[in-house]
Picture 1: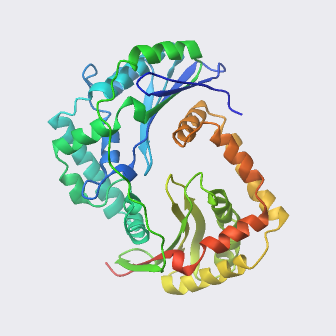
Picture 2: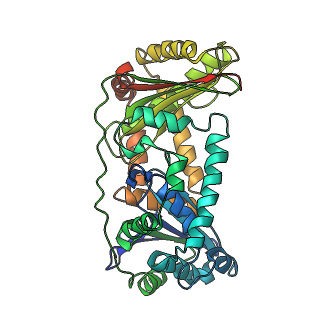
Length: 413
């Protein structure tokens, strides 16, 4: 178990402290429970846009990065469909600077016209470089839109299209900030060479005065049960055809989620996996292949994907993939194969726990799911799953009527 203490401020901010006095570094991780799933159609990409805006100025901080660097700190952030996470590493002696900087931008981000327009250009350029001008860059724009019809998982975190980013108004930005960047929608984890008493004192000093200015009443639509196979053909000047076949799967914490994770580990993880050995090493159609899940707060996707050898069509490759998966669905998982993927999972968790930053992020991530202890409970539950339980879920999830298939076709430029 990962030792921690946990308390809540009067304004609802959840604070978690993980003490590790093996170094002189402190980690300050602030997670906001807002991602692209909290956006509305026509205003997509705002969560990611805010990740950029938050590094502008606030009432008492002209340039966020500069003030942090002056005391030896470094920072970064990321946005997912479910959360936006900001993290700082800093000498523990200068921890209060992190409290000052983060509390100031939670309470009174400047959001000047200059900042908004500067970051709009940055995000638009990122969109063009990574999603429009990159081979296969728009895969998840197409695949998410194919698999989901009503849920905001229909679009990636960068946004559904460039026009949404172009058309954000100042009021859109302010409304999103007021609705989501508030104490009761955040989780603060402070880890490293710190004490619970010190963190509690600083949290009350810097964060407790911040009011919850507004609450979002945005209801996230529930995705209806999929009844038929979805397909889409995309043509682009890419090197070879590619195939993406996704199946709806349970949400994090829901029954069947861990089994879905193990399915992809067993069938598609690493060079010795069934997919790699059958379709790449001993096959002639796939240049690469893999399986993975998009673990998410709401029901996500279990995905098989691969790129074809030159001249091979995605449709032909799908038939070969289906044959391998079909044989898997009628087989038994050996104790050795199951133990192998569980050992890999244990090794990965051990590796993750080496860095204080990873521990802080995991505490925050599982706290937003309901309880920091879920990180270890999930691991323990996963280690107890039997092969027949995995196969029951494999046959329940991997059905044609539950699939969405993207055929990404290579055409001349």
